[in-house]
Length: 352
Image (tube, rainbow, N blue to C red; front, side, top):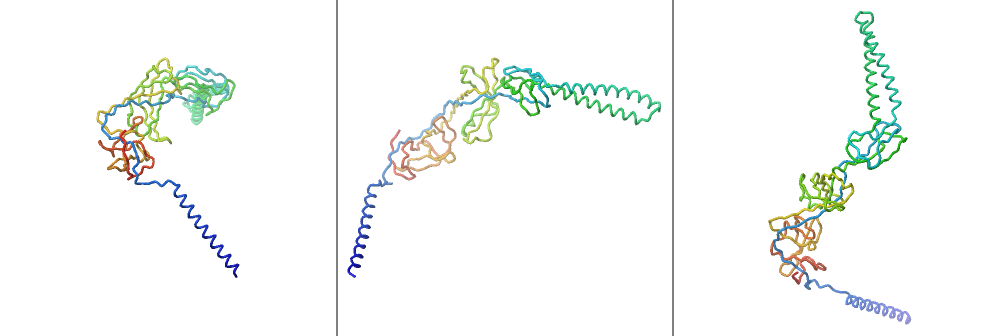
């Protein structure tokens, strides 16, 4: 019995010792962990807003693309008997590019022409006989129908023969050759690629806040990176109606390539526009904005406290933004020092 009492006492002592030890460890840990005091003022850099005149120059990079480009294929199948152009050849609208073997079609055409000649003779003879009531008119009618059918067959063969000559659909340059003489051509099988660079399309991609700088039909100066002194005039022909995954919209210009046609498809270039707005605006650094593109916000400083404020952005100028709504002249906003900053925090303002 005495031993049991001793065991119980020892067990209780161990439990008490463990509890005390854990409590001491917790207190020690809490002392080591930094306890943030939300009442302590946070040092931030601030700026007092004033109205400014917007006078900015924008440069947008883009890529030149051919105004027209087409892969040429045959409308009828056949063996290629002659390839009349090569890569780099300059071609004109209607120029013959490829000739397919049409010898069998020409033989069929001769056969039909002989048949037509015989039917025309029959029609003439039966017409005379029918007028004299020497034959029934049904024989004349059959000959006339047979002659019409033969003429249709002849027209069909002539069209098929015409399609064995593959022609250029527009002026341009042969930029790719996907076949050789002796190969077999079939409808839908690409044989040549024709590219027209007498005109070019120049495409840039802009965020939604900047697409209002462009209007359909408006003209701008464009340069190619390879020829910076070669100024080209570009006219806006398309403003995208659907954003890319990066939330950018394509703007496309039509550019008249110069007579030397130095600018090639795939070259990079840039467009520079100047934007001056006489009316003064509220402009803040983009780094002062927090939140998202959908809901941009800034911290105002009022009576020593940070106040989270919703804003509406009019447009962006490089690393600055023009404010449409939410801020006025004289407002003080936080520009840097956002670590640990929260709505309602006490702040120590340092002017930029």
